[in-house]
Length: 245
Image 1 (cartoon, rainbow, N blue to C red):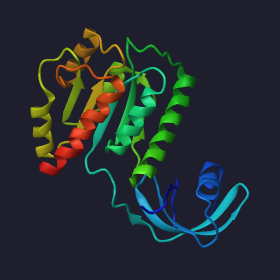
Image 2: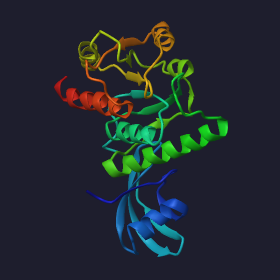
Image 3: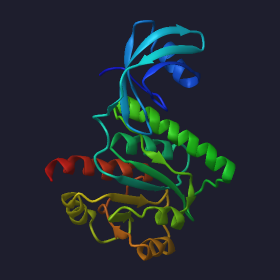
């Protein structure tokens, strides 16, 4: 696979880069004058063939060629709403969701979320998850990067998802299976949204709030999954089934 690097504000022409991007290109990849790579803009999905002009301590100068539409963009709008979990579990969810084609990730504060975030910590976490999404896009070869929203209360997070016709809450006590409704939505080519709680799951009141907002409450079966496993299981199924419809 070609070397790829995320370049925000990608535009044709010569440009001097510094900071984390320069460190990655010059120190991690050890690019030197004459070395090429593929640049992509995480926000727009545009790509460009890039040529290193010169590398210096702390900076690198690159010449970007004409922009083109990236060929590896997500083909379906998919939002994942994740209940805030402990440790680095949300990091794993963001990474997996990016690799499996999600276009938006929202971390929601639920009643059973052990971690408590104030505004400042929420901004820091959002920046961290956005960085993880960019890196996951680079590693898996995506031309775009999912939007990562600022964390917010569960009901508010669900209410932000207004464009998806098919919206599913994964709940361990649900009895309606996800598979039939999901396959129907994929056949129709509808935008999708999924949500799940943190470790400990969702409370009845939160499930009722989801229903009131038009979300279907569904099950993944009798086995209990870790909260960080649910996104990989569901989005992996979406990725596989899209080849059948």
